Amino acid sequence: MGWTNSHLHQFISGRTFYGIKDDEFSFGLEVKDENKYTLNKLLESEKETIVYEYDFGDSWEHKIILEKILPYEKDKKLPLCIKGKRACPPEDCGGIWGYQELLNTLSDPENPEYEEMLEWLGGGFDPEAFDIAETNEQLSAYFR
Image (tube, rainbow, N blue to C red):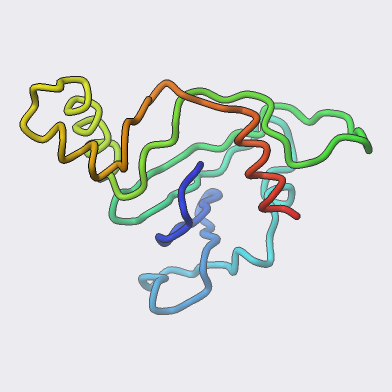
């Protein structure tokens, strides 16, 4: 997603939770150790779904769908992003509501918080930007 993995997260499949196996962070729920599972074990058939929740405070929830299983090509480096849209919301922007507020602020240079938001972001932010080559470089680096 482009985030820094600096917040708690979990994957949810039905009533089963996969995440960090630590009683301090499980909130009394049974959580399976995410390090013992891979997505291809959680999503085995086309159209199966799981939920990825990132940053429990901001509560970013993503529905991950196994849309299609393609034939294996030994010359293709995996994983590979084949399509994407829009930029990842900035880390710690306050969930979907904070992100919408951020976009509203950035769309109006007369907004009293405009300069403060630009400084917080470290420069401009284009919510429509998506660079598939950069995404695949990051995937390649992560999985080396």
